[in-house]
Image (cartoon, rainbow, N blue to C red):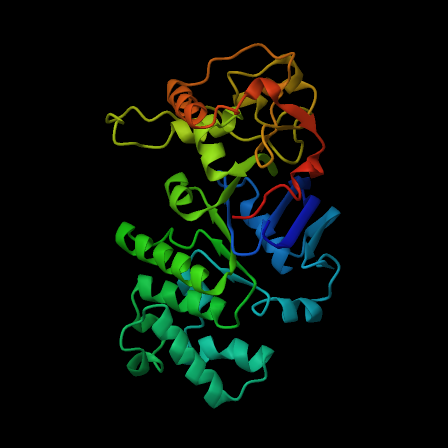
Length: 367
Protein backbone atom coordinates (compact mmCIF):
# COMPACT_ATOMS: atom_id res chain seq x y z
CA UNK A 1 0.00 0.00 0.00
CA UNK A 2 1.20 3.49 -0.86
CA UNK A 3 2.11 5.98 1.87
CA UNK A 4 -0.80 8.04 3.19
CA UNK A 5 0.12 11.72 3.27
CA UNK A 6 -3.21 13.44 3.97
CA UNK A 7 -6.22 12.58 6.12
CA UNK A 8 -9.40 14.61 6.48
CA UNK A 9 -11.58 13.24 9.26
CA UNK A 10 -15.18 14.25 10.06
CA UNK A 11 -14.69 17.83 8.85
CA UNK A 12 -17.49 20.32 9.40
CA UNK A 13 -17.25 23.95 8.24
CA UNK A 14 -19.91 26.65 8.69
CA UNK A 15 -20.11 30.16 7.25
CA UNK A 16 -21.63 32.90 9.39
CA UNK A 17 -23.98 35.12 7.35
CA UNK A 18 -26.62 37.76 8.09
CA UNK A 19 -29.25 35.09 7.49
CA UNK A 20 -27.68 32.50 9.76
CA UNK A 21 -25.04 29.79 9.69
CA UNK A 22 -24.51 28.02 6.36
CA UNK A 23 -23.42 24.41 6.91
CA UNK A 24 -21.12 24.28 3.89
CA UNK A 25 -19.10 21.15 4.76
CA UNK A 26 -20.79 18.39 6.73
CA UNK A 27 -18.88 15.44 8.17
CA UNK A 28 -16.44 15.02 5.28
CA UNK A 29 -13.79 12.28 5.52
CA UNK A 30 -11.23 11.16 2.94
CA UNK A 31 -7.54 10.45 2.61
CA UNK A 32 -4.85 10.85 -0.03
CA UNK A 33 -1.89 8.66 -0.88
CA UNK A 34 1.54 9.33 -2.30
CA UNK A 35 1.47 9.67 -6.08
CA UNK A 36 -2.28 9.20 -6.53
CA UNK A 37 -4.90 11.48 -8.04
CA UNK A 38 -8.15 11.89 -6.14
CA UNK A 39 -10.90 13.66 -8.09
CA UNK A 40 -13.65 15.51 -6.23
CA UNK A 41 -16.76 15.98 -8.37
CA UNK A 42 -20.13 17.60 -7.87
CA UNK A 43 -22.23 20.53 -9.01
CA UNK A 44 -21.52 24.15 -8.10
CA UNK A 45 -22.00 24.79 -4.39
CA UNK A 46 -21.47 21.17 -3.37
CA UNK A 47 -18.45 22.05 -1.22
CA UNK A 48 -15.57 20.97 -3.45
CA UNK A 49 -13.61 24.21 -3.34
CA UNK A 50 -14.34 24.96 0.33
CA UNK A 51 -13.00 21.53 1.27
CA UNK A 52 -9.73 22.01 -0.57
CA UNK A 53 -9.27 25.62 0.52
CA UNK A 54 -9.43 24.38 4.10
CA UNK A 55 -6.35 22.26 3.35
CA UNK A 56 -4.49 25.45 2.45
CA UNK A 57 -5.81 27.53 5.35
CA UNK A 58 -7.50 29.83 2.83
CA UNK A 59 -11.04 29.91 4.17
CA UNK A 60 -12.97 33.18 4.22
CA UNK A 61 -13.01 35.22 7.43
CA UNK A 62 -16.62 34.28 8.14
CA UNK A 63 -15.82 30.54 7.96
CA UNK A 64 -15.54 28.46 11.09
CA UNK A 65 -14.28 24.89 11.43
CA UNK A 66 -16.83 23.39 13.81
CA UNK A 67 -15.16 20.01 14.19
CA UNK A 68 -12.87 17.48 12.54
CA UNK A 69 -9.20 17.29 11.70
CA UNK A 70 -6.89 17.69 8.71
CA UNK A 71 -3.54 15.96 9.11
CA UNK A 72 -0.74 16.31 6.59
CA UNK A 73 1.98 13.69 7.09
CA UNK A 74 0.77 13.30 10.68
CA UNK A 75 0.78 17.05 11.42
CA UNK A 76 -2.52 18.77 12.27
CA UNK A 77 -3.29 21.71 9.97
CA UNK A 78 -6.40 23.07 11.68
CA UNK A 79 -5.38 25.63 14.27
CA UNK A 80 -2.10 26.62 12.64
CA UNK A 81 -1.37 30.34 12.56
CA UNK A 82 -1.13 32.24 9.28
CA UNK A 83 2.65 32.38 9.69
CA UNK A 84 2.79 28.60 10.12
CA UNK A 85 0.52 28.04 7.11
CA UNK A 86 2.74 30.20 4.92
CA UNK A 87 5.45 27.57 5.40
CA UNK A 88 3.04 24.87 4.20
CA UNK A 89 1.56 26.69 1.19
CA UNK A 90 3.59 26.26 -1.94
CA UNK A 91 6.38 24.25 -0.37
CA UNK A 92 4.19 21.38 0.90
CA UNK A 93 0.71 21.90 -0.55
CA UNK A 94 0.23 24.00 -3.69
CA UNK A 95 -2.87 25.03 -5.61
CA UNK A 96 -3.81 25.78 -9.21
CA UNK A 97 -6.88 28.01 -9.44
CA UNK A 98 -9.53 28.18 -12.18
CA UNK A 99 -8.63 31.48 -13.82
CA UNK A 100 -4.91 32.01 -14.50
CA UNK A 101 -5.37 35.76 -14.97
CA UNK A 102 -6.59 36.18 -11.38
CA UNK A 103 -3.76 33.94 -10.12
CA UNK A 104 -0.97 35.95 -11.74
CA UNK A 105 0.23 39.43 -10.80
CA UNK A 106 -0.12 41.53 -13.99
CA UNK A 107 2.66 43.88 -12.82
CA UNK A 108 5.33 41.19 -12.29
CA UNK A 109 7.45 39.39 -14.87
CA UNK A 110 6.60 35.71 -15.03
CA UNK A 111 10.17 34.69 -14.24
CA UNK A 112 9.93 36.65 -11.01
CA UNK A 113 6.57 35.05 -10.13
CA UNK A 114 7.85 31.52 -10.75
CA UNK A 115 11.09 32.14 -8.84
CA UNK A 116 9.45 33.84 -5.84
CA UNK A 117 8.55 30.63 -3.89
CA UNK A 118 12.17 29.45 -4.08
CA UNK A 119 13.46 32.75 -2.75
CA UNK A 120 10.82 32.80 -0.01
CA UNK A 121 10.81 29.16 1.13
CA UNK A 122 14.26 27.86 0.24
CA UNK A 123 16.14 31.16 0.72
CA UNK A 124 17.66 30.64 -2.72
CA UNK A 125 19.56 33.48 -4.38
CA UNK A 126 17.77 35.39 -7.11
CA UNK A 127 20.18 34.07 -9.75
CA UNK A 128 19.66 30.44 -8.71
CA UNK A 129 15.90 30.90 -8.44
CA UNK A 130 15.67 32.39 -11.94
CA UNK A 131 17.71 29.52 -13.35
CA UNK A 132 15.27 27.07 -11.73
CA UNK A 133 12.36 29.14 -13.04
CA UNK A 134 13.75 28.84 -16.56
CA UNK A 135 14.05 25.06 -16.16
CA UNK A 136 10.45 24.87 -14.94
CA UNK A 137 9.20 26.98 -17.85
CA UNK A 138 10.80 24.49 -20.21
CA UNK A 139 9.34 21.56 -18.25
CA UNK A 140 5.78 22.87 -18.53
CA UNK A 141 6.19 23.39 -22.25
CA UNK A 142 6.57 27.14 -22.70
CA UNK A 143 8.35 27.49 -26.06
CA UNK A 144 11.51 29.60 -26.29
CA UNK A 145 11.39 30.02 -22.50
CA UNK A 146 14.57 32.08 -22.20
CA UNK A 147 13.19 34.74 -24.53
CA UNK A 148 9.94 35.00 -22.55
CA UNK A 149 11.12 34.84 -18.94
CA UNK A 150 10.94 38.65 -18.68
CA UNK A 151 7.48 38.90 -20.25
CA UNK A 152 4.30 39.82 -18.39
CA UNK A 153 1.15 37.66 -18.07
CA UNK A 154 -0.87 39.62 -20.64
CA UNK A 155 1.70 38.70 -23.30
CA UNK A 156 0.72 35.01 -23.12
CA UNK A 157 -2.31 33.06 -24.35
CA UNK A 158 -4.75 31.48 -21.88
CA UNK A 159 -3.16 28.05 -22.27
CA UNK A 160 0.35 29.43 -21.73
CA UNK A 161 -0.80 31.40 -18.67
CA UNK A 162 -2.17 28.20 -17.16
CA UNK A 163 1.19 26.51 -17.80
CA UNK A 164 2.84 29.39 -15.93
CA UNK A 165 0.44 28.88 -12.99
CA UNK A 166 1.35 25.18 -12.97
CA UNK A 167 5.04 26.11 -13.01
CA UNK A 168 4.55 28.36 -9.97
CA UNK A 169 2.65 25.61 -8.15
CA UNK A 170 5.29 22.96 -8.85
CA UNK A 171 8.52 24.98 -8.56
CA UNK A 172 8.89 24.18 -4.85
CA UNK A 173 8.27 20.42 -5.31
CA UNK A 174 5.11 20.24 -3.19
CA UNK A 175 3.88 16.91 -1.86
CA UNK A 176 0.28 17.74 -2.82
CA UNK A 177 -1.04 19.69 -5.80
CA UNK A 178 -4.65 20.88 -5.62
CA UNK A 179 -6.08 21.64 -9.06
CA UNK A 180 -9.37 23.57 -8.83
CA UNK A 181 -11.07 23.30 -12.24
CA UNK A 182 -7.71 24.08 -13.90
CA UNK A 183 -8.95 23.77 -17.49
CA UNK A 184 -12.43 25.34 -17.27
CA UNK A 185 -11.53 28.53 -19.14
CA UNK A 186 -9.57 26.75 -21.89
CA UNK A 187 -10.65 25.25 -25.20
CA UNK A 188 -10.80 21.46 -25.57
CA UNK A 189 -7.43 21.08 -27.31
CA UNK A 190 -5.59 23.15 -24.70
CA UNK A 191 -7.45 21.31 -21.91
CA UNK A 192 -6.06 18.00 -23.16
CA UNK A 193 -2.53 19.43 -23.29
CA UNK A 194 -2.74 20.76 -19.71
CA UNK A 195 -4.12 17.47 -18.36
CA UNK A 196 -1.41 15.49 -20.14
CA UNK A 197 1.21 17.87 -18.74
CA UNK A 198 -0.06 17.37 -15.18
CA UNK A 199 -0.02 13.58 -15.49
CA UNK A 200 3.45 13.65 -17.04
CA UNK A 201 4.89 15.83 -14.26
CA UNK A 202 3.16 13.68 -11.64
CA UNK A 203 4.81 10.57 -13.08
CA UNK A 204 8.21 12.24 -12.78
CA UNK A 205 7.76 13.69 -9.27
CA UNK A 206 5.31 11.29 -7.55
CA UNK A 207 3.22 14.30 -6.53
CA UNK A 208 -0.25 13.60 -5.13
CA UNK A 209 -3.07 15.49 -6.86
CA UNK A 210 -6.52 16.52 -5.68
CA UNK A 211 -8.43 17.35 -8.84
CA UNK A 212 -11.65 19.36 -8.52
CA UNK A 213 -14.00 19.24 -11.48
CA UNK A 214 -17.59 18.95 -12.64
CA UNK A 215 -16.45 17.20 -15.85
CA UNK A 216 -16.75 13.44 -15.39
CA UNK A 217 -15.05 12.83 -18.73
CA UNK A 218 -11.89 14.43 -17.36
CA UNK A 219 -12.07 12.28 -14.22
CA UNK A 220 -12.07 9.06 -16.24
CA UNK A 221 -8.70 9.84 -17.78
CA UNK A 222 -7.11 11.72 -14.90
CA UNK A 223 -7.93 10.13 -11.54
CA UNK A 224 -7.26 6.95 -9.58
CA UNK A 225 -10.12 7.50 -7.14
CA UNK A 226 -13.14 9.78 -7.12
CA UNK A 227 -15.26 11.34 -4.36
CA UNK A 228 -18.74 12.56 -5.29
CA UNK A 229 -19.95 15.56 -3.25
CA UNK A 230 -23.48 16.83 -2.80
CA UNK A 231 -24.74 19.53 -0.42
CA UNK A 232 -21.49 19.64 1.55
CA UNK A 233 -21.15 15.87 1.95
CA UNK A 234 -19.27 13.06 0.24
CA UNK A 235 -22.03 10.68 -0.83
CA UNK A 236 -19.92 8.14 -2.74
CA UNK A 237 -16.19 7.41 -2.93
CA UNK A 238 -14.13 4.70 -4.58
CA UNK A 239 -11.83 3.82 -7.41
CA UNK A 240 -12.84 5.48 -10.67
CA UNK A 241 -13.82 2.14 -12.19
CA UNK A 242 -16.05 1.37 -9.19
CA UNK A 243 -17.83 4.72 -9.03
CA UNK A 244 -18.24 5.04 -12.80
CA UNK A 245 -19.22 1.45 -13.56
CA UNK A 246 -20.83 0.22 -10.33
CA UNK A 247 -22.33 3.48 -8.96
CA UNK A 248 -24.75 3.15 -6.04
CA UNK A 249 -25.99 6.59 -5.03
CA UNK A 250 -28.88 7.96 -7.14
CA UNK A 251 -27.08 11.31 -7.40
CA UNK A 252 -24.10 9.56 -8.98
CA UNK A 253 -26.54 7.85 -11.34
CA UNK A 254 -27.89 11.26 -12.31
CA UNK A 255 -24.42 12.67 -12.96
CA UNK A 256 -23.45 9.72 -15.15
CA UNK A 257 -26.79 9.76 -16.95
CA UNK A 258 -26.25 13.41 -17.90
CA UNK A 259 -22.91 12.66 -19.58
CA UNK A 260 -22.98 12.72 -23.39
CA UNK A 261 -21.68 9.59 -25.13
CA UNK A 262 -21.13 8.61 -28.75
CA UNK A 263 -24.54 6.92 -28.62
CA UNK A 264 -26.34 10.00 -27.27
CA UNK A 265 -28.94 11.39 -29.64
CA UNK A 266 -29.34 15.12 -29.98
CA UNK A 267 -31.51 16.54 -27.22
CA UNK A 268 -31.71 13.36 -25.13
CA UNK A 269 -29.39 14.26 -22.24
CA UNK A 270 -31.15 13.80 -18.90
CA UNK A 271 -30.96 16.54 -16.27
CA UNK A 272 -31.32 16.02 -12.53
CA UNK A 273 -34.63 17.67 -11.54
CA UNK A 274 -34.94 20.12 -8.68
CA UNK A 275 -32.33 22.17 -6.82
CA UNK A 276 -29.90 21.45 -3.96
CA UNK A 277 -31.17 22.03 -0.41
CA UNK A 278 -30.72 25.25 1.53
CA UNK A 279 -27.69 24.65 3.75
CA UNK A 280 -28.91 27.29 6.20
CA UNK A 281 -31.43 24.60 7.15
CA UNK A 282 -30.21 21.31 5.69
CA UNK A 283 -32.62 18.36 5.73
CA UNK A 284 -32.44 15.84 8.57
CA UNK A 285 -32.22 12.86 6.24
CA UNK A 286 -30.54 12.31 2.89
CA UNK A 287 -29.81 15.74 1.40
CA UNK A 288 -30.70 14.39 -2.05
CA UNK A 289 -34.10 13.01 -1.00
CA UNK A 290 -36.23 15.81 -2.46
CA UNK A 291 -34.68 15.28 -5.92
CA UNK A 292 -34.47 11.50 -5.70
CA UNK A 293 -37.18 9.56 -7.53
CA UNK A 294 -35.83 6.40 -5.87
CA UNK A 295 -36.13 7.80 -2.32
CA UNK A 296 -37.40 5.55 0.47
CA UNK A 297 -39.19 6.62 3.66
CA UNK A 298 -35.99 6.69 5.73
CA UNK A 299 -34.43 9.27 3.38
CA UNK A 300 -36.74 11.98 4.72
CA UNK A 301 -35.95 11.28 8.38
CA UNK A 302 -32.47 9.85 8.90
CA UNK A 303 -29.13 10.62 7.29
CA UNK A 304 -27.83 7.41 5.69
CA UNK A 305 -24.51 5.96 6.84
CA UNK A 306 -21.84 4.83 4.42
CA UNK A 307 -22.37 1.33 3.10
CA UNK A 308 -19.21 -0.59 2.26
CA UNK A 309 -19.30 -2.34 -1.12
CA UNK A 310 -15.60 -3.20 -1.29
CA UNK A 311 -12.41 -2.31 0.52
CA UNK A 312 -12.28 0.91 -1.53
CA UNK A 313 -15.91 1.65 -2.49
CA UNK A 314 -18.46 3.32 -0.16
CA UNK A 315 -21.83 4.95 -0.81
CA UNK A 316 -24.19 6.78 1.58
CA UNK A 317 -27.66 5.70 0.47
CA UNK A 318 -30.50 3.84 2.18
CA UNK A 319 -31.01 1.89 -1.06
CA UNK A 320 -28.15 -0.34 0.08
CA UNK A 321 -29.88 -1.20 3.35
CA UNK A 322 -31.14 -4.78 3.38
CA UNK A 323 -34.64 -3.52 4.23
CA UNK A 324 -34.82 -1.27 1.16
CA UNK A 325 -36.95 -2.33 -1.81
CA UNK A 326 -35.25 -3.41 -5.01
CA UNK A 327 -34.96 -0.55 -7.48
CA UNK A 328 -34.25 -0.48 -11.19
CA UNK A 329 -31.65 2.20 -11.95
CA UNK A 330 -31.52 4.08 -15.27
CA UNK A 331 -30.84 1.91 -18.31
CA UNK A 332 -27.36 3.38 -18.82
CA UNK A 333 -26.44 2.58 -15.21
CA UNK A 334 -27.76 -0.98 -15.61
CA UNK A 335 -25.47 -1.44 -18.61
CA UNK A 336 -22.51 -0.22 -16.56
CA UNK A 337 -23.38 -2.63 -13.74
CA UNK A 338 -23.63 -5.57 -16.14
CA UNK A 339 -20.22 -4.88 -17.67
CA UNK A 340 -18.60 -4.31 -14.27
CA UNK A 341 -20.03 -7.46 -12.68
CA UNK A 342 -18.93 -9.54 -15.66
CA UNK A 343 -15.36 -8.43 -14.94
CA UNK A 344 -15.77 -8.41 -11.14
CA UNK A 345 -18.06 -11.32 -10.18
CA UNK A 346 -17.42 -10.57 -6.49
CA UNK A 347 -19.26 -7.22 -6.83
CA UNK A 348 -22.58 -7.71 -5.03
CA UNK A 349 -24.58 -4.75 -3.73
CA UNK A 350 -26.75 -7.06 -1.62
CA UNK A 351 -23.71 -7.70 0.60
CA UNK A 352 -23.11 -4.01 1.37
CA UNK A 353 -22.61 -3.34 5.09
CA UNK A 354 -23.29 -0.10 6.99
CA UNK A 355 -20.13 1.39 8.51
CA UNK A 356 -19.01 4.48 10.41
CA UNK A 357 -18.16 7.62 8.43
CA UNK A 358 -14.46 7.27 9.29
CA UNK A 359 -14.35 3.73 7.85
CA UNK A 360 -13.41 5.24 4.49
CA UNK A 361 -10.08 6.31 6.00
CA UNK A 362 -7.17 3.96 5.44
CA UNK A 363 -9.02 1.96 2.81
CA UNK A 364 -8.19 3.94 -0.31
CA UNK A 365 -5.10 1.89 -0.99
CA UNK A 366 -3.53 4.58 -3.15
CA UNK A 367 -2.90 3.89 -6.80
